[in-house]
Image 1 (cartoon, rainbow, N blue to C red):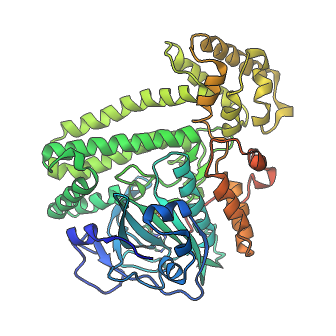
Image 2: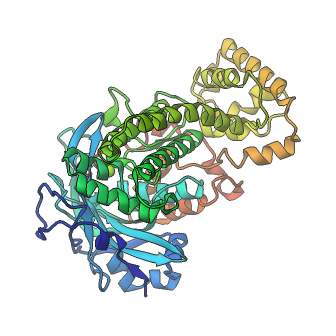
Amino acid sequence: MKLQIKDTFTKNLPADKILENSRRQVTEAVFSFANPKKTKAPKVLHVSQEMASELGISEEETKSEFFKKIVTGNEVYPNTKPFAMCYGGHQFGNWAGQLGDGRAINLFEVEHKQKNWKVQLKGAGETPYSRTADGLAVLRSSVREYLCSEAMYHLGIPTTRALSLSLSGDDVLRDVLYDGNPAYEKGAIVTRVATSFLRFGNYEIFAARKDIKNLKILVDYTIHHHFSHLGNPSKETYIQFFKEVSERTLAMIIHWQRVGFVHGVMNTDNMSVLGLTIDFGPYGWLEGFDFGWTPNTTDRQHKRYRYGNQPNIGLWNLYQLANALYPIIQEVAPLEAVLNQYKIDFEQQSLEMMKSKLGLYTSDENDTKLMQNLEDTLQLVETDMTIFFRSLSNFTDAESGFQLIKKSFYDFDTISDEVKSQWDSWFQKYAERLQIERLSSEERKEKMDTVNPKYVLRNYMSQLAIDAADKGDYSLIDELYQLLKKPYSEQPKYEKWFAKRPEWARNKVGCSMLSCSS
Ligand code: AMP
Ligand code: MG
């Protein structure tokens, strides 16, 4: 396995001068060198061959002993120096100080097909940023991150990727529900890949420490390597940089809203400056359409990161980034203009996105009302988001509309006449609205099916794969991985995955309830 190794990050950015891998505050540095921990009995469970080929690694090579050692942290690739990044963050609305890569270790940069990728291990042992934790990850959360990041990619949503999923062979102690019942679980390691893992928190930490010199070094690096089209760093480019981060953040969140993805922990340390979906922790997928839903039990009381609040939180997080960038811009108005534009763009893009889910491409003054009416109706009784929108592409007339979406109701038999008549009246309006569209129903269906996925990684599906993997059966991981490579296509052999969450999963830990204990 011969990789085209680069070191733009470690070469151009200030390193922690202390080399000892001890937990501490790290100042005036973007990263600290730290080596992964050797593990007892490493075993590769799955490899994303799509990702491997992006890095210039052949299928044959992914089966080698060397590959296994590299992706489980048991060997360091020749002439590379692994490191962990320093960042801070606002967690659940409060400044949390230094966080950093507590259980992520960056291995190296690979250049392939004109792209520069950063490769990192998640769960490979402690770093100076591990605080009170162990730097490790367990199988359940690793399966979830592995499958979901690749699923997001195939849905066409900006995201960090995954190269491999492995068992470390070591046991890890976790208290899943934080109720004083810790138990040992299998340790696992995911190899993650992205063009950059920089987060809002990487900039915030320097601003919080009033280290403007290093803040500027990091922003200049970011622009030079990731936003080079903006030109040489200057006050104007810093503003343009912030504008583009804002636009990318919004674009990512609109995608999440479209497919019903709830990130679960939108703290500023989990916000990629490239607008990538990052850090798959207690995330979840909407089953019943519900703006108030969050998968994260840690957030159960305030539901700060609920589905319907993700666009607002994106904006709140951008305010924090604006504050962090202010010292190198020294002007409030242009930053405020960007934040105001986010609100305007959100309204417009959100409407466009919802219209595309309904197959509407022309404009009508009542479109906003039609959408609001739909969202209200969807929330009257538990209605499966994915099945509803996918079924809608077969719409022909208002009279048969309600029957068409029958499969999306969780309890069809108890639906009242009143609810049914609200659906009938919405379908009536939808049918009328379709009159002014120009596409044939076949063309409309084809387009709708490219934005309304047929298959998403429902929470119970991951849990089934996790339960089987825990017993040594990894076939379901592969089945879901294969299924989710084509989320918008009809795949008759996988029809059983186009189904509502089964009742047993409604209140099961891991299916509807997830904590940060991963
Ligand atoms: P998260 O909520 O997963 O984004 O994590 C927030 C912070 O806690 C990050 O700085 C992580 O690196 C750190 N962290 C989470 N789990 C662990 C762990 N098991 N060991 C060390 N640090 C961790
Ligand atoms: Mg995180």
